[in-house]
Length: 155
Length: 256
Image 1 (cartoon, each protein chain N blue to C red):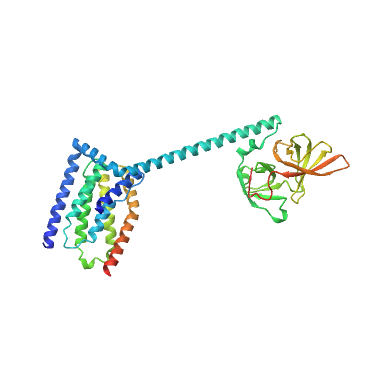
Image 2 (image 1 turned 120 degrees about the vertical axis):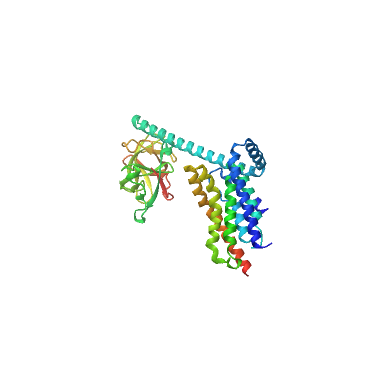
């Protein structure tokens, strides 16, 4: 449910900005955040198909050609599952902060990068760079929530 | 189910999703049905997106209104300035009087940078100079009334001699009677009108403005009102106290 709300908020903000600024990928940040706290024994199929569904709906609303964000979102989830899954649960401490940041940044980097890579164009690249800039506050907030939850679970 | 099986399942599902996404990317652009789906999806999202559309439209309308208003304001100010300058030029050419409303639209503001206690009623320093097109002798106003004239100019500041200064003397006219006299300050906050022939029916409240004295001070610049007779000499001339229109104890900015 929270992912649906995040998707709708992201869509709402995109409409509100009217193309004036690039909105952070809140939906993918939500998936990444949930995956970071998933138990190692869980199967992360929900994440794969949620990312797929969210991506296809985003493509249908904003890109016009289904596949771009769908592909990007699935790639992000697969990278995350493999990288985060390779770290034993005991090692997922505050020392992994940089890795968590990189994983969150990847979730903002790859999905909007694919349309730029495939369709190209100068405007596309500048928009893509701008989105990374605008994503930083959202990533910072997610990192704050992550560290807070990590502290609470350590108590 | 062990971890290996989980990983395998994730890979199978992940790869399936990847292949499906690639397939969609490859074929969907050529499918007409995609347009229909996009339309339906857009219609469904209309409801949650509606507040954002309204908010954006309100913002865009406000921005557009604000820009139009600014643009109109600047145009009006420019036209007023042009009009005022033309009226002043015309008055200089014909020798006719100028009203304060003719001057006010083109006035610019300067801040009082210094008013020294030792020369409180004599002069002030303002923060505009040569680069702001201030010239020596230029009239300075407050509240649309003559406050003084520029006595010296430097690049970024100027000194203004106030009408209350003991060395300030300019010809003036009583508007109602057209009697000519000389406005002088006393260096202590008072202004007087001298050399008005006695017994000419001059009353308190009559308006006093500049008379023709040169190119930089055109006639008709408002100075103030007659406040009362100070003295009537044996030489046949009376001196009147003037109530300056520019309040000399209140100004922090002046106009030029």
